[in-house]
Structures are given as C-alpha cells and as structure tokens.
Image (tube, rainbow, N blue to C red):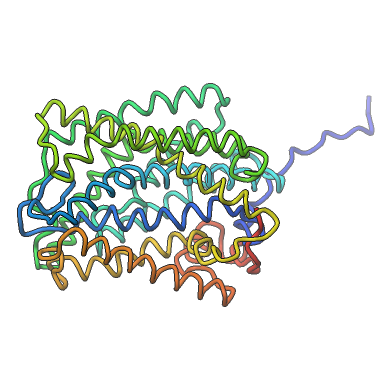
Length: 405
C-alpha cells in the first residue's frame, strides 16, 4: 500500500545568532558593571603592596590613621563584595545569551555550546592576563564556574535555588580557612619580569582549582541566573518594592556581617585565630548578600531613568558595556606602576595613595569607554571575544544606541 504522506525531516537547529546589539541592552546591568569596576580596582590594588610587613588583607601594617580608616571602609563595603556582584552579573549574562538563541529559533543545546565556546575563550583571556600582568585575574575562575554552571542552567527554579544555597558552603569555608594562612609579604616581589610570569601563572592555576573548581563562585553566579529569570533587571520599574527589599537587606547584611573582619583589616581588632576564621567566613557569606544588594540598588537607579536614557550616567553605562576592556586596562596601568618589575610603587605608597591611584585608573577607563561609545565603537576586547565566540560575520552587528530601561 502506498501513501502520499511523507515523514517530515527533523528540524535543523538554527545557527547561533550574533551577540546582543547595543540597542537591545538593559541599562541596569551596564550601570552595575561600570560601577563594580571601580570596586574591583580598589579591591585589587591592595594585592600589589610588598616589601614591608603586611596585615590582614595585604594592607601595610604601618599605615596612618587615614590609611586605616580607608582600609576599614574598603574591607567593609568592597572586599569580597565586588566579585560576588560581578558574579551575579556574569550569571545574568549567561541566561541572556541562552535566551537570545532560543528566541531566534535555536535549541538549548546550541545555546549551551555557544556558552562553552565563550567561557573557553574567557579562560584563554584569563591565562594571558594572569601570565603577563595580574595573578589575581578573575576571568579564569569565572570561566571555570561558567562551564560548571551549565550543568544547572536549565534546572527548575526551586531546585536551582537549593543548589545556589548549598554552594554558599564551600565559598564560606574557603574564605574562612584562608585566615589560617595570614598575609605575609606580597606575593609578587621579584623584579625579574620573566620569573614573575611563572609565579603569576602558578597562582592563577591554583585559583582556578580552589575558586573556580570548588564552587567558590557558584552561589553568586546561580543567584544571577535566578535574577535573570525573575526579570528584575530587565524591567526594574515593575519590581521596585522587591528590588528595594533585596537592596536594603543585602547591604545591611553586608555591613553587619563584614564589620568584624573589616576591623581586623584596619588593625583595630587583633582577633584570636578561631574568631578570625569565623569573621572571615561571615565576611564572605554576607558579601554575597551585599553583592546582590548592590546589583538591585543599580536596578532601582535604572528604574528612575525609565524613558529618559542614562543621561549623565551614560559614561558609566558605556564602561559597563565595555567591561572586559575596562577590566583589562586596569591591569595594563596598575601592574607596571605597582609591581617590583615595574616602577615598584607597591613597596612605598600607603593604602590611601593606592586607593587614589586605583580610582584614577578607573576614571581613565570611564573616559576611554565614553569616547569609544561616542564614536560608535565597542571595546577592542569585546570585539575580539565576540568574533572568537560567534564568528566574524555574526559578531559584526551594527552599533546602536544604548536602550533605555
């Protein structure tokens, strides 16, 4: 018996569409990214101190009253708060990449393969960054965490929330136990640049294992995934009450929970070892809450700008849109200035001077990002990452204006 019916061919998965255009972006995440880059600069500059006695958090033990006050504020409001904030935004970004592929008719598998390529290239960027300039590179640990997060990205929201909660345990324990190995002299003290590349690479590899491999960043990344599913950052004006609650709760928890450790960083409390471990663990745990609080705070700011665009905050949003370039430029400036193989400023300046230098470097990156935006150009490292991830043709989307929230 014959029939005119034909068996339909299975659908061919759509090829990955290009990256998000500037006119498709949400304002809140870009404002948050642009701001957290200042936090990252202030947190990272302390790791360049060397050549003298250093206390908790790599701060010089002979600091002035101003140095200690600023050490307290940076430890309380920024240390172990900036990287969870960036990790939340990283997880949010992963969901946006996947959603964009699905809207274009692609499959979950195709979107996940795209994210694998993106994270592998981020890992390569991190290896080069660490080897040439900065041992504390965050791109590598984020890339490893991003690859692991793909195992959970499609879980139901309730299960994902439980995984995120459980992932807080290794983060908290790891940071707390690190206090059993108090800071001595800075980790980069050699004036031999070639030797310093090997030292930095070795430290970076250990960070991949202990920070990325053991779920040290997984909790805030998964929180970012949950945040993306909620729509809080894409339509903040619809969620003002929830955002306000999360912002206030997270930031209050960060201040209260971070104070014992911050007092040690400022050398205003010489805690016994056991209490120091507990204070460090609490500092890390509440840092995740503070990171989420900061993200929600910038979402609230974006909600007030609805329909008006970023206005005077456009340079900050432009920096967030070019966050990879801005982050790497920080090391291009700070590493030669502070390291022993460069000008060696890390051996002489105090905390206040180091923070001023870091803030100045961040301000320069904002000016550069604003100039690139005014010219209709992306950051060079964003261009490179997109071409490597999507291919040159799909990555070459026309520039556009930043979308209003």
